[in-house]
Length: 468
Ligand SMILES: C[S@@+](CC[C@H](N)C(=O)[O-])C[C@H]1O[C@@H](n2cnc3c(N)ncnc32)[C@H](O)[C@@H]1O
Image (cartoon, rainbow, N blue to C red):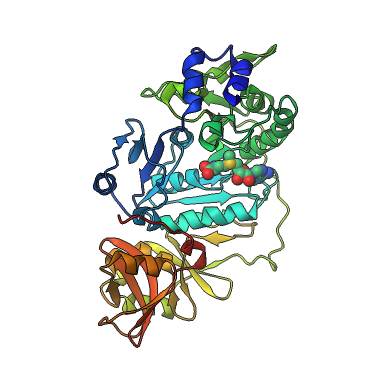
């Protein structure tokens, strides 16, 4: 029914209606990418093989796999401990077009739930700074949970309306604007009920999309790249937005990926003509590559219309800017307790933010001025000498003292559910690192023959893990 309605609206753009309808009736294949912070693509492929799951590596995106039949990619130990992330395959094209380079300063203006933020952060190989902004607080929490699970250190999260975010103008090498949209391209995945929202919904959301793109053009440096993307087919939310906003502040560059089938951006729609270079944008209908639907445009910023005007300052007494900590007793304790060489952290910085937690970032991470920072890098320690589960998951392979190896999958389940269990282990009483083979599970408290799980409540909900 939904597919029929979409076909009716876009019949002039869809070359093969039968293929489109057939594709919309089936769930899309699953896509995962190996997290270079924790596992090689080979290790992930081996893990999939051990589970009897067949996969194909994507020819156009390194470290990613297409898995035709797998509906529970989030219910494995490998997922829970951050070996891989799941993401709609065609949405990988946005960061492909953004093409982040070593040490770049990148802004992800509409970031949650965070798949593209994580993609950018890992493509930077842990260098530079990614500012991940999201307006909705609960969605920001999901983004944080994903980054902590993946052990990512180079992301700073903020919580602003992206249309008016008070970051300094022209301070980013690249900006991703993956805007809220009518989501037609995700209907195959979500199977959500869908009411034909036109023309109202698209024209209303298009105003927000225009303001978000406009702010992105103010925030990127001249010569820098802005990528505008949506998961909808609606030209009102795609070509028309760019046509209305860009002017001479930039031009479109090709977003084509030779290995996959796309369609050039439109030059006209329902009597409206769009600028010529919009043909460089790419539209993806689901039946082109057996994926969701997507739109992506890559814009190069010109040096026209730059605005370096002084901006209103945030109230800094309410929002202290975090300062790096050169030395920390508690961090020295952390290295000693778990037998880790402090040189492992030579390219990291430790920050105090608030009273109770210490945060770890890569050395090149520079939190932006003028904005309130929600989180930066990864929380590693509480000042009362307690390591976080995320830190132990991230640095588990380097731990040489006070580690407990579980050898029974039921014990693993109990631990991940936050339960205590009797256990004999030759470790010093206190906080311990708990692992199951190569899976680094996190923090426990061992005392008098009892192991108490310290897994945070928010990740205890991940039940039904399969063994592997
Ligand atoms: C399409 S989703 C982004 C998906 C994300 N880039 C990813 O890959 O996981 C759009 C996001 O923009 C957020 N959003 C909506 N209006 C916003 C605004 N004015 N400023 C910043 N974020 C906004 C929504 O809450 C939503 O999380």
